[in-house]
Length: 586
Ligand SMILES: Cc1cc2nc3c(=O)[nH]c(=O)nc-3n(C[C@H](O)[C@H](O)[C@H](O)COP(=O)(O)OP(=O)(O)OC[C@H]3O[C@@H](n4cnc5c(N)ncnc54)[C@H](O)[C@@H]3O)c2cc1C
Ligand SMILES: *[C@@H]1O[C@H](CO)[C@@H](O)[C@H](O)[C@H]1NC(C)=O
Ligand SMILES: *[C@@H]1O[C@H](CO)[C@@H](O)[C@H](O)[C@H]1NC(C)=O
Ligand SMILES: *[C@@H]1O[C@H](CO)[C@@H](O)[C@H](O)[C@H]1NC(C)=O
Ligand SMILES: *[C@@H]1O[C@H](CO)[C@@H](O)[C@H](O)[C@H]1NC(C)=O
Image 1 (cartoon, rainbow, N blue to C red):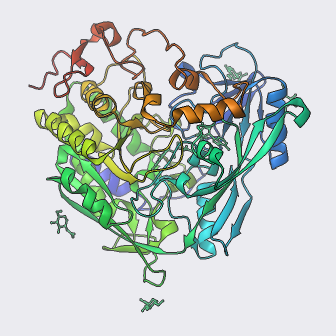
Image 2 (image 1 turned 45 degrees about the horizontal axis):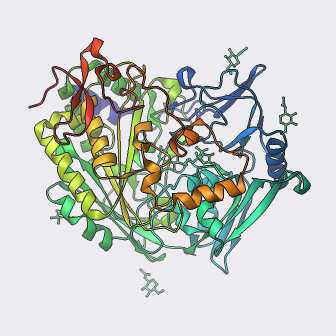
Image 3 (image 1 turned 120 degrees about the vertical axis):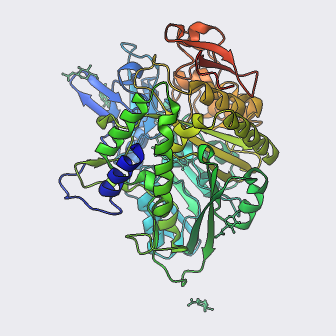
């Protein structure tokens, strides 16, 4: 029944099929909000910044030029203020961009520098195949600008709602094992960085880091810890098109063949839907500019979403408490719909008419049309204002392909014990598997790696236990602890970062650069002090495992009152997960 109902809803309301009357726009709200008493910073997902995980900012500034940026850093440096930079997007899930203390109510002054108005300068050097952009420039603008003069930025993440400074600072990536690979920072050849300085130097100075400077390897992926990036210089290639086909097929053996797939297709990826036993191979190859086709990839998950659908799905998620089966028909419908519309590929820019879809590189990699929604009843699906979807995003980076294959074998074993447990993840985007190359960046990957992302339900209230909580905790602990995967810096729950610094051989070099450039530690906050520099974690409070703030070791870390107890994993016995006593799957 759900199936038919949802299918109709999606079919009627999806913009690919039907365009509603446009009223007033509902773009995402600005992340910094101020009133007479001060300002707050929020994450665009609502992952933090709400009442329960507040970010108080006492002063914010919006520089428009590099000199104003330098003066802003000088102001913080002179007054010894904890300071952070944030973009106009604030899309990063960990609380990286909040200045100072994580529980800062009444804890003194801090300072926030927004790059929102430092977002126009783009200089293309066509002869040398390079572009230099100001840190606040939106990725979409940068891409359109370089494509406009017949060039291409080869790598970009799937999501275009990021700034130039933000996208490199957290190691964001698309997918490629070819050339320089799928991470954006590996296409960076220069950075202008503003750092604190002595009084005699006016309290702040600008470093111009060029390709051979070892500091560039610290600055490429810096989590905002070194100073403020003013400008980024990227290497480009001659413009090209891409030809994409999605193959919705059986999952059998994908853990053995993914390497061939990644080697054969320049921008390959795989999406795996465990409950549906389906793997979707993305055949994505470079073709010459004169190949015919004006396609776009307007990824379905980033299209303007009917507020009504988001809320309906959320209601079903919540109401299906105690019964994961209820989610399976939805997972099925969603997958069927994705196949029908090729995930959002559009041959002529309007509608999908058949494979392959061929279009300019700049239109085929990164998207985010929900950002520009002009209809009052459509937003990005996760918009916190609409009480629609709210989810966790786990992203694990596996160095070494054999570890990744073993991880998938383990997840398949866990799935086989009760496939319905995986319907929840398949309602979102299954497991998205992408490829990135070894990098020189100190906080980048030192080997060719495989990245897997999955999203799953997060309760509105931190203390509410969730259906299949135990399954996601087990998968998460397998990835990060059994197979030593590294957490994506811009995603994940806190526990994924346990021991992260030991996973990076060059972490010491990064710390040295940090001490050197920011000796007063102004660009740190509680998150980085705790996760990167080992400051004592908060005490392990009741229910801490539910929100991923700890791995449970006692029942009180779960929710014994609601029947959730700390138990061992089913496949990975060393895992400790919060399990409902009736949800035993064996
Ligand atoms: C819907 C969605 C899809 C996504 N898809 C992908 C994906 O496909 N692949 C992927 O890898 N990631 C993905 N991400 C993660 C995203 O790429 C990162 O969160 C990225 O860092 C966001 O950039 P931002 O401009 O919003 O940065 P912010 O969140 O504003 O800042 C991020 C960090 O960078 C620092 N920073 C920002 N600007 C500067 C500056 N000028 N100087 C110094 N430090 C700075 C901040 O202090 C902070 O530490 C996705 C995120 C969302 C919301
Ligand atoms: C101002 O914002 C703070 C949070 O920053 C909030 O607690 C307070 O209620 C707001 N005051 C007014 C008058 O809106
Ligand atoms: C806020 O910062 C600016 C510098 O950007 C400074 O001139 C101003 O005095 C500060 N305001 C407060 C209230 O501290
Ligand atoms: C899709 O993948 C399957 C299994 O890998 C393969 O047999 C089939 O030929 C592929 N289809 C296309 C159109 O490439
Ligand atoms: C594209 O251009 C190349 C030469 O640059 C030519 O050999 C080829 O035939 C052209 N293809 C099409 C489809 O026009």
